[in-house]
Length: 500
Image 1 (cartoon, rainbow, N blue to C red):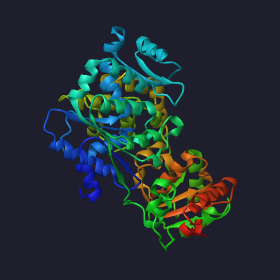
Image 2: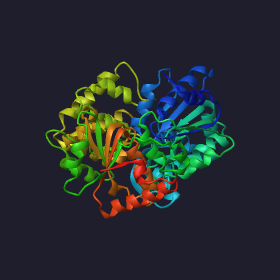
Image 3: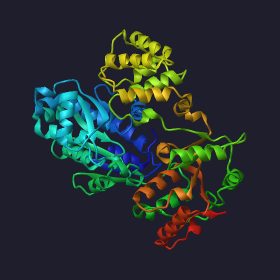
Image 4: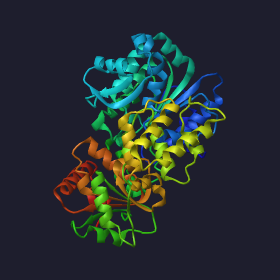
């Protein structure tokens, strides 16, 4: 891997490290390089855990690591605490009545911790709090860890370092759990995140927890600011959205890369086509799915087809079996997705013998042959889930059936083949495009959440950002707030973008 001096400093820094990584700075590239370096040079039986929020992100990390990761954990936050703390040690803390097989169903909601414990005892199921700002899974894991010496010794004996991605999306309970790992168990942590890209405040994410760790004496802090994705003008614009990056602004005379397009609700599509490069990749980003779909149909025509990429019903499954439903859908939709791909995505610890391929092919064949019969289809999926050690939840099975019953969802699995795409800002995170189109009215910049979403949207663009201004009420709010923000640095909107 080619590394900058700053990235190499991250690789070489030992102990607890927190990295503030702005958009486009190559954080995954750097994190993977650090994992590979430290796995290669650590001379003991202990391994690492690489934890992130989504299966997709975990899979990307796993795919990029070139060294041996046998025994290491690479997966989601919830999977880590469920598989490494709750399942093996809940009985040690709460008694033998909790020794049953435990599955997860986040549709089960309750108000009190004791109610959640009762769900586990009587149903063998982990649920979640009715209050989305509270996290039952991590609260339970932390209680177990504090009360079980054997759980603490297990983690200390197994892991020499834990890498945590997208830390700005952790809630306060998750952060308390991770700080316990380092402050009490003395397991080294590598934390990477960007509070400017926090999109999940609505469900309890606490970017302040990330900022607090920066000031902890036990952590070294390194800031990654060099953007390898966006051009200078787009970097200037995005950096000025936040005080901590405003100092990175450098005067730049060419303002052709960001266009504030004055138009009406009826002519914006025609005006965009006049300045859009149809031969370069582009994304139309909206804050709501229905707006992304509606505007894609208006903008798309025979010359420039904007393909709406919908959010999948199965994307809402966040328990430890989520990977299974994603893999079944890919197996059904994609001719290129084979049983070997399916096997590759099975989390560590699942059966691995010479007959596995044949057994899986048998299950998957029965599933694909019965797509038209809902009852049998769900039965066959349940059979496969149980074979792999999962207790399938009716809600998750229905979300899978809803997904595979609508073939338009196949586009979400192979969206890379479309040059021009329309999607939500949330769905675009982690992606990049030569050109990005956004609507001023989607970002009134009333609060931190508006600023975070706006930052994520504009930093998807590599060389062109088009901001549609229909002069609606909320678009006016955007322009007024932006003027106030830029005025702090004696700049005007006209100094940062081209008004057409």
